[in-house]
Amino acid sequence: MARMVACASVCLRRLAGGHRRGIVGFSRFLANPRVTAEALIEGWGLDASAACAGRHILAIQDTSEITFTTVATRRRGLGEIGKGNGRGVLLHAMLGLDADTGGILGLVAGRVWTRAGRVSVPHAARLLADKESERWLTTAETAKTVLAGAAMITEISDRESDIYAKWARVPAPGFHMLTRAMHDRAVQGGTLSSVALTPAGEAAVTLRARPGRLARTARLTAGYARVNVRRPRATLEKGMPETVSLTLVEVREIDAPEGVEPILWRLLTTHRVEDPAMAWRIVDWYRQRWHIEQVFRTLKQQGLHLEDSQLETAERLIKLTALAVQAAVLIMQLVQARDGQSEQDAAIAFSPAEIETLKALVPTLEGKTVLQKNHHPPGSLAWAAWAIAKLGGWDGYPKSKPPGPITFTHGLSYFRAIAQGRNLQNV
Ligand SMILES: [Mn+2]
Image 1 (cartoon, protein in one colour):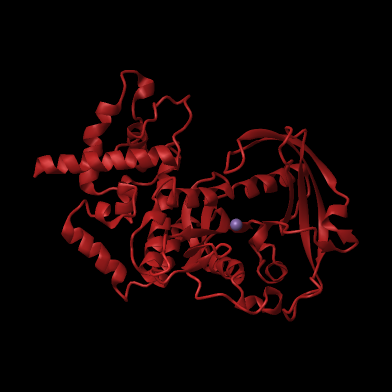
Image 2 (image 1 turned 120 degrees about the vertical axis):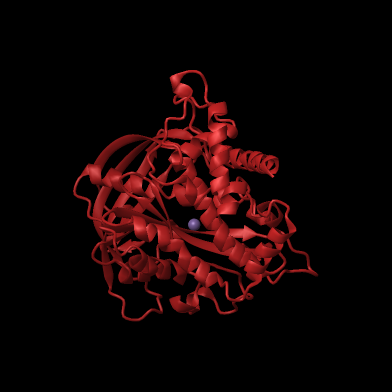
């Protein structure tokens, strides 16, 4: 995993630096039946588990589809994804964030799988335990164990996880949920859209760019209310209460630019909202979901290029994915370390020889002025991140746009070449 970070790649040949022994070693590791995907995923939570003590943790979960190229004569054991127009694996991951600082603590839990075939029983005729949507509840339950040391946990997920059984079964003392409503749910006295809200005022919020949306500053207005959400009539699940009591925080965009769909979010949460400040805090926490999307982007086209992997079997691709997602999170921690907030050591991502290379490199990357020096403690992750960002093309001025994962990915592959060249010279 450390090699994946330092090489910014999942290609075994590149991880091994072109050495046959290394390639064989990595291949055998992934082929070893004792190296199971389950065990690799169990390891995901170790960092977050150790770092969560006494903190309020935002536990953000989401699913991503990883597409691998196949042809009719060679499916690599991969099942269908999406609407059946591709093949690959599904990755469900939960990321732990410090609610107060926004610092990434690491992955918490999740799963990686490929579909065995098409399910013929209609969705509505199956119990939750027989549906893939069960993953939202299971992952949240695992978080309770992994993050047992946390002062408080807020589980955050998008509208796909607005499942009544989840609201009924998962919340617990110190374990909260925050999810966007899937549709205009029935509540006592009407539906979500008809609820009378307590106004929480307006705010200007910067929306980040994402596929299909340019970055923009939006004027948002919010309101909140306590609601009793009704149990769906058609549910097959047994023993669920008739209603669950939640807080609704509704956010609307005013004066949206022409041709842009104005924002309308109906957020449901187990948190109590007693004043406008808390309503906006809920909105802010929900917006942190961006981090899990960023993990997926770092894993795919904009970073590690996982989808280009040439491994032949589904089983190995699943294990590779389980490792690569951890590497993607580490790259994001490196990006965050650039701000100097993290206290992590460079050794979590770089070998001793690479740290020596970094030591030799830093003076050559520093400018003449104080502003252009690396002020972080040598050997810290922040210190390494400064150098990697510079190699990736960041100009180093505090006022400039901070380097993102793409700059870091470029910097890492450039660094890898330098470190290898330096090694050769030492030989
Ligand atoms: Mn999603």
